[in-house]
Length: 187
Image (tube, rainbow, N blue to C red; front, side):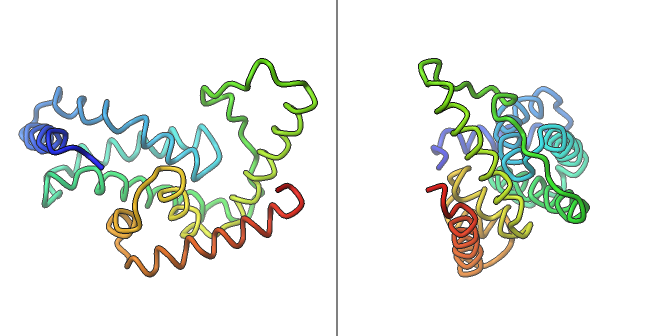
């Protein structure tokens, strides 16, 4: 959770950005772009799609910043925008199979001491896990990524997605069951 100083800084940056201060908006982008990219990549499993979603989200945020009722809610607001865009991409791609993305492309590096066999096994398991994640409904995937990978609380996910905490819990439970079933034999 953000510290009080961080929230004040966010409010100040949002207010200044609303007044047309491009540097203030750039500071907001600096704080959220990497987080949004990680969220979108984990949700979509494709680096290019994730980059497109983040770019579209940031452009739309700049254009509609005056529509944000509470400047302190900027983080939740921008995650919701990114989440909606990710859901749109997932819906458009439903008919075609997803391709697994190599996490090394996002700057993650394997342990140099690992044996080739362990490395291949880990990569295969990760690819299988990515495929299992792609089988989740868009709602389950977005909810699961926000909670499990981005570390948002149930309450924060509910606020971000505009749903109840009970719905968040239900989606995460169903996602966990599907992941466990999909990963059976790998764990």
